Image (cartoon, rainbow, N blue to C red; front, side, top):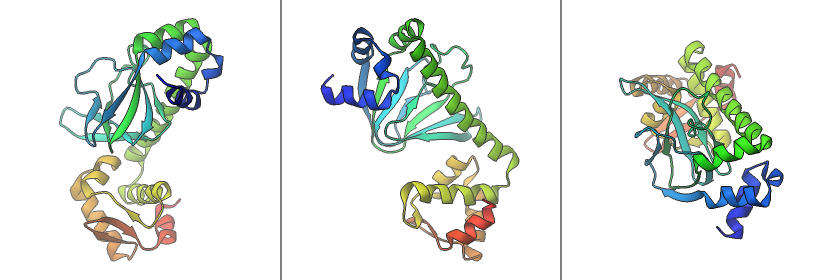
Length: 225
């Protein structure tokens, strides 16, 4: 792995400076850069323990899949983000499996679970880092579940549209209704009906290119944010 790759690890892995040179070599030599096409599955379809994921470029979607095929998006990952939930064989307290797909063409470093486990056993800072990252992700998962269980879908959809605009800028959420349904844990038909209602209230304009937010302030007030 070259200097550019080592620099990426240094920036993404906050405890990098606390590793010995031997430990740095261990994690670098037991990591591989994998390129995924948009829509390609990274983790979950075949079970097993993939290892820790570090996103170099692109975007990943982490979700649950029910026996009936319903998907619930838990969170999304972007450049520099780290996910430990795919290393369940190392973090034995994780008793459920998640699915991970590439939202866009993506480059992802996968850290071998055996190397990660060795580092966690021998370096308390690495162990604390892994547990902290896992806790942060669980907080996101709990927020998602609270929204699905306790928040009406109209408010949930309004919040989702506003958060997407914060991430991408501009005034248009360039996602299909099917994608929005997956990200909000709902059905496409429900999303379609609610977007029609929003359009009737002059909050949004729906087109093949996505959803254009016409009145962000009014949508924010509608969401109760």
